[in-house]
Amino acid sequence: MFFNRRTPQSAARPTGRLRLGTAAVAVLGLGVLTACGGGSGCSSEAPDSTTIKDLVVDVLAEPDSLDPFYRNTAEAQRYYRLVYSSLLQWNEDGTLAPDLAAELPEVSKDRLTWTVKLREGVTFHDGSALTAADVVHTIEQAKDPENGAVWLAAMSYVESATAQGDDTVVLKLSEPYAYLDGKLAMLPIISDEDDYKPNATYATTGNGSGPYALASLKRGDALTLERNEDYYGEPMKFETITFKVVPEDASRIARLTNGDSHIVPDLPTDQVELVTKRNANAVTVESNVSRLFAYPSMKADRPTSNTDFRLAIAYAVDRQRIVDQVYSGAGRPNSTYLTYGTLHHDEDLGLAFGAEPDLAKAKEHLAASGVELDRKFNIIAVNDPQVTSAATILQSNLKDLGIESTVESQDVAGFYANLVSGDYDLILFDAPASTSTGFAPDYVNGGLNSQAANNFAKFADAEMDDLLDVALTAQGEEAQAEAWRAVQQRDVETQGNIQLVVSQSSQAWSKQLVGYEPSALLWLNTLRDVT
Image (cartoon, rainbow, N blue to C red; front, side):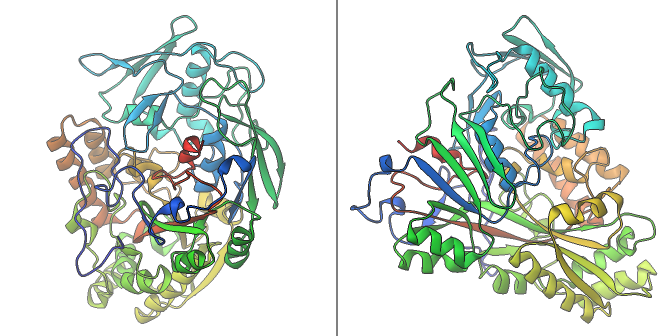
């Protein structure tokens, strides 16, 4: 089901706390539309997947670091979700299950004490035993602001973690954080025998307890994993999994249809029909929603540090043109960080800036900002064809507003230093919302809380911080919905990140890969189900 601007879908709101909150959430589980009437079952004569021992996944880019604390991008998570394990695990139907934990946590009546029993006999890839001390070490490293971990905000309400023997961890919370269980399914557990240094200890190596271990890394070419024969869970099907870097769409499609690869997780939506005509499977994954947004620099000498200037941009964007031209209609306009399909998303606020430009309001805010540029405004787009195309549309929109701008495309590694320092105007980025929307609305805290490590734009607003604190600790569906609506309202007023559109992702896979369906989550979670 593609989004449609004239008949926008209402965001389904699951009644259970542990439900996936992604787009078209009523289609739980795999949540896909096949373009060939039967997913991997399109051909009854497809070879058995038992013939595939070495799985090849063609990706647009490799992780710029293998550190599971350093990035939560799609390319990073595809790697470390196979190499590292977490206390809990997300199922495809949106429920939680024990992973390293022997059972679901025991939670005190006041929800301030969480007791986690660990399963026995788990080892890291280096052969050392995984114990409660490793879990405590992991949480302490994630909580240390000096480490700048992407999981800092997720652990912010954990006041202390204590080991009771080798098999029990007790977490004490400062407040009854409503979404801790989901975060325990996200935090990769690392070994306390490794002296963790950010983007150093695990930058090119790995030591997890997951079903696969790092075999080799050839920068710019391929990342290969080998099956962990000592894995505590059910062994996965493939002896090796290789992530092959193939940036060109045409090359990835050709390799898949020629039998050189088995999965293409980043298929442009307008190529689904082409792939199916070439006798491979291709789908648009409804529940995998990506946010296209812009980081505005908050550095005092940058025009985007001015709220009215940011709002001028927000009103000037032709979001529907981006949806139609860049994503072939598989998307919708978006105005708030709390993305369409997420639990507690408010439909009206999510469409606050409209589908088409409102130049009158844009000019009002531009005048109110008092900003008069004596140079060209600079737009950096992450090195992705779709994001770059969207940037050129934004460039045209800004010209209509009277702002001349330039567009340049850069890899994350190229612009990251600028992002951290604030030495830029606007950076366009595309982030899969399912990284968090499958788990809770609290991913917003990571991007808009002034103290969050992954608030890269360094947006700081005291009122937003207070509203986020209320939303993160509100108890009960009604109170949570009200609190998150207030967060969205403040987001519309401030645009700490300027939201543009949300889009659906597509994926292709070989008919030889019998039994495979794309995951409703960001990573290749359903590889576990291939037998």
